[in-house]
Picture 1 (tube, rainbow, N blue to C red):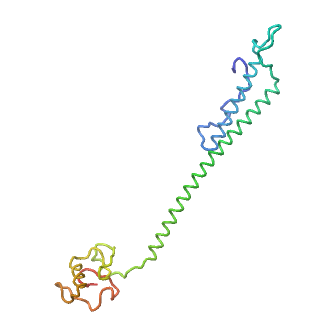
Picture 2 (cartoon, rainbow, N blue to C red):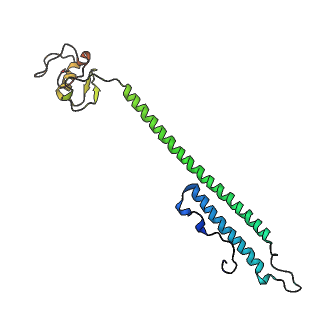
Length: 202
């Protein structure tokens, strides 16, 4: 087409490479390239039709071809077609952009909700009551605490002797229960400490 019927074709090199762009910029570059190609094709086809010798009517018979269009008519149709294509491509670009923005807003909302939930958990943790550390806290194997069945606050990892003592104490048995273990006048909880080590050693 270009060789036989020269037309003004805008080389694609004048446009940004659509495949090196993303998002709306890519859509705009593709639209510009498409408009250039469409305009060249329309112009070339109209000129071919006008120059086609078969369109010349034989003497006494009607022409089977469309009448040749003037340059102004061709340009007007090209402009209308290009405008229509631009509108459609712009609409498509806006639709894609809207979807991208909606997805981004959804991600931001999820992230904000996650951060707020973490803040709530931290505030709950910070507001939770703390027990006074035991003077023998280095003896324990962990810092997780639990409440025994007689109401004493105990550390996990204490000896089986302590667990046995708690069971005996709940049954009302007091006094010297194990070797090297004595019953304090007050319970560990009453003294403000946590039970640690052996029977009522605070």
